[in-house]
Image (tube, rainbow, N blue to C red):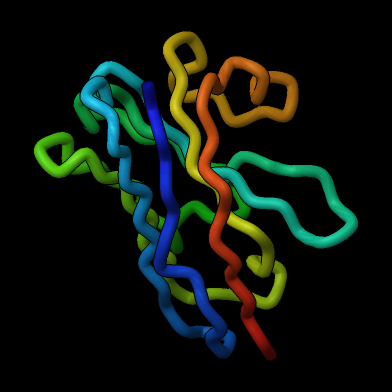
Amino acid sequence: QVQLVESGGGSVQAGGSLRLSCADSGYTYSSYCMGWFRQAPGKEREGVAAISLGGDRTYYADSVKGRFTISRDNAKNTLYLHMNSLKPEDTGMYYCAATYLGCGELSRGAQYKYNYWGQGTQVTVSS
């Protein structure tokens, strides 16, 4: 069973940085591709970044390319999202998710392929 727990959210000013973590207490973490998603108030959940099983392939939404970096440490069963140059529009609840079949997919239509989701961690960026 996969159990994902996010941490690292908080409130920062525009231009600041945060690092989100997603820990999996299960024993099959390295069997899943992983992704980060976010949902702003009143908006649909959107894909932010995704990473392959071994971490050698990464995928990003256009809105975060060059500012966010996704990585994973399979020895620690942990996924990360390093967020730099944060903007107010990055505000939202950030969720990590694990998938067998949707590796690298970030579209809204592909979210159903993510089998397990965390509870989320809030990120608030003020101008």
